[in-house]
Image (cartoon, rainbow, N blue to C red; front, side, top):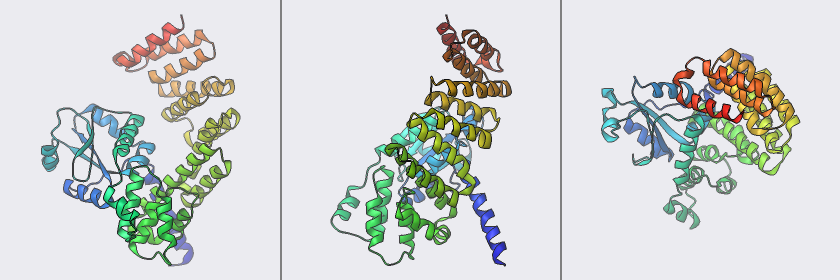
Length: 391
């Protein structure tokens, strides 16, 4: 195979894996016993969706929540994910161990199958992530592993377990990773490759550069998807650090490394990073510039995503005139093309913020006339409360 053709095939492969990483939660398809073994080997918790094929809320979560890229990023990074139709005979083992009476029932379990958290009913993407974060916060670093490490044990397998445990408990692992790597001359053994992968938590680090240097070998060993997920996580964490320290250099470094290593996701990542950074910096001018680029290049006129963008804008700058003017235009497009009552209520809220009670009332009344609105008790109640604020 010629070198140009090899590079072309590699580019197509990376594009395909990058696109897959943005499609939400990846569910493990093996048996329940295999899922527990995988969780134990990787020292992860298990997220389980116990559902029924006829369940309406289950179908909505599968279609709109589990497919959310933010949900996928979080759960793919931190959990072994499984889903079981509780009424199918092949899932009888799981159903006997975890009998449920309502669907969906969402469980977070440890590797031995002990229930860490349980929730009955559908959840929004934000609530599901918070559900998972709470479970991770309850996880702790094994005292035995920590004590052995502090006593001087630097067995590679123990170091790997310690790094995983620190990451799972949301504690810093970079020093432990660097201490191990600095003591070695090469990283060609399987455990060192795993340590590089697990220890890559920020893009602005030597470990990240080592991950990229050894990307092919680590991908061959651990799977390209795991490497891609880790690159995305590290770049996101560097954006968080840029926001925390108001450091534009770190922001640019995260965007540059995304473009170099996950090009298919880089454009959306860049706009989103800029919006987060300038929202935190209270810089409406640059925030609006990033939002306009995001809409033009990524969101376009997709009603659901446009509405999501408008909601973010209102959260970031609830009273800024230029932001409200732009939000009004996009909210109107989302409402007219999407037709949902929620979209009209958001448009009504923007009019209210701008002091236009007449259009605010008209948009709120359209929300009640939208398809399905009369069966949506929550929406009807919110519209009623909203209209009262206009009196």
